[in-house]
Image (cartoon, rainbow, N blue to C red; front, side, top):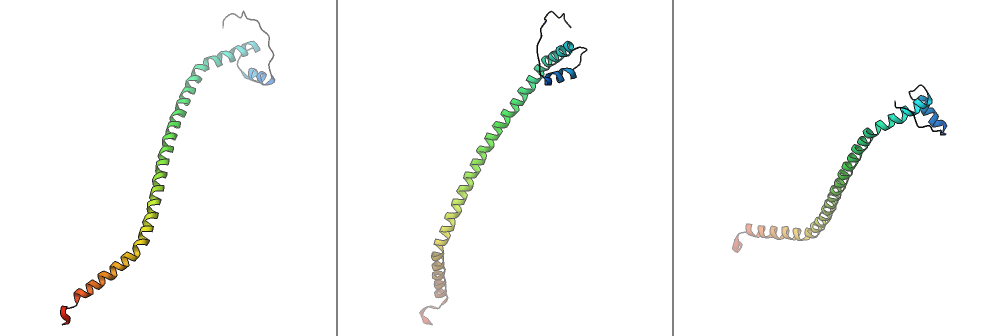
Length: 120
């Protein structure tokens, strides 16, 4: 370590005291210095990890937005299909009398066609 020309005194909490006590070093000053240097050296790695996590979150947000858009499109299609189904059901109900009339008319025409002409 370098020469220690900075002399300072400070107060700290019991929590900080526990952290310092658990860190490596022969004295409180050495423990404090080791803790500060350790954290300082870890900082670039932690910043890189943070940036990677931020990128992952941004990618997930883009994916989420895309999925929401696709879900909205599917919901719209389902709504359209349900509307078409209702209209189809309405048309089928309205067509029933016409279909029945057409069958009766066709049946009468077919029966007339089977009959010999001239009543013979």
